[in-house]
Length: 278
Image 1 (cartoon, rainbow, N blue to C red):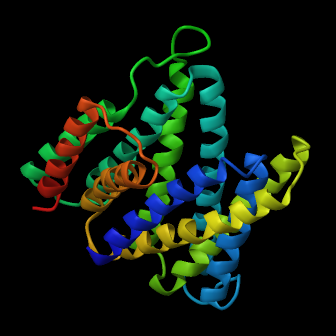
Image 2: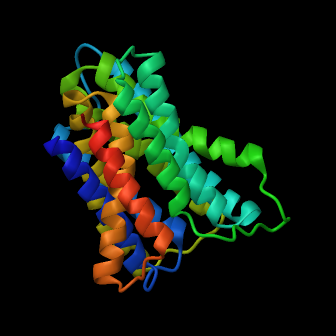
């Protein structure tokens, strides 16, 4: 549970840094690339290298690379869906990606799930939907469902890669898994910067490097949490716990006001967390 709490705190810090960086960074892809530079460097430093050796090395590199592709693809899909569907629907479907690793934990990895946990999961999903702003506007009047489903699956499958590694990979290769995850995402992000001819500014780099620290910590702590707790507990708790943390930071630090339905949703999330961990 300790690592899960640290993962939630780190994930919330990612949102805080992104919120603050909006005032300074000009090019989001360049900032994302700098973020991956920091994540890769941190993982490589703690791993003591880049390429793993010994049993399971190929699996570690393969799963990490696949996760890196999904990371960047998820970002591209999010940006594309925002242009196509507005802001609200993509944000909702991205959060609902928690469905994928949770269902995979039960169907593929055979993790047992208790009735109270099922109720908690359902309450968490309902709270996520309730947390989204009203008036989901789109450019063409209705959401483009295939793109939204692709966004949901992409985010969810990247979490599944982590669970696959934690289950069948070499436990000593955790940082190497993250090295390849962030390194592949960095290479693809660099290619995207070149294709889009996006310039790089000092604020982009500094904000990206600052973003990379909690981003790496969140991924590392989540892997450790998966080692200690069932995925049916970790993923929903991580998702809704991050929502609570980000919301509290928004209210305390950024003077954001909560609507009545968001307060109700937060209460539902707290209840869901209790049920998930019974």
